[in-house]
Image 1 (cartoon, rainbow, N blue to C red):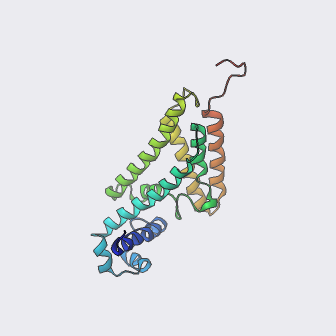
Image 2: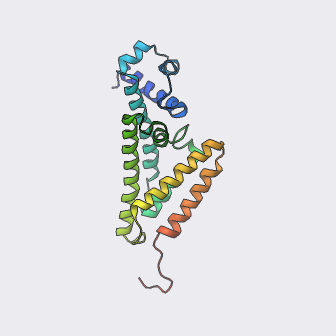
Image 3: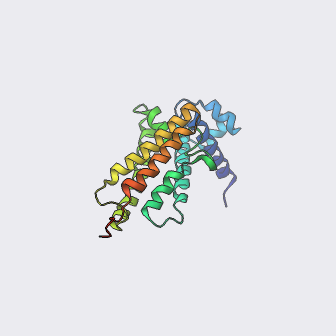
Length: 206
């Protein structure tokens, strides 16, 4: 059973994740965290040893929310093509903004922190590396099963998919317009279906 202290801590982390992802991982003052959480400074520091520790926990929470939605999208997918398309279409906003209100936490931290906050930057690098590894493993499995072309580079595929989706998210947030993200999703759908998927030769030879 979760204790009251754990429930409070988890609630603060979730609220802080939304706040920092929308207003800045480095710039949000502790007073704003106090305002959204309803806790005084002493109460916050009973749960977190520092603002940095809270930011780390909030970032990890935000990344986990994105990861869980993407992993859930793979349920029922049997082929590599289906899995890649599911990951792409998980960015559709019908069920709420993806990755999160304010955009992708990994991209936000990467842009905001750069080398100014090595701890957050390292977390962003690790999260992105795991995201790329998932895509690359799907591609490798698809190549082994002859579902995808044998001459593609899994690392390039992950860069194209993530770059397209993240760029679409960024443009849609910047212009407050869903069309850039929708355009990226349509393009990546075509890329997977026509450039990655292995098609049988027209003459029927293997």
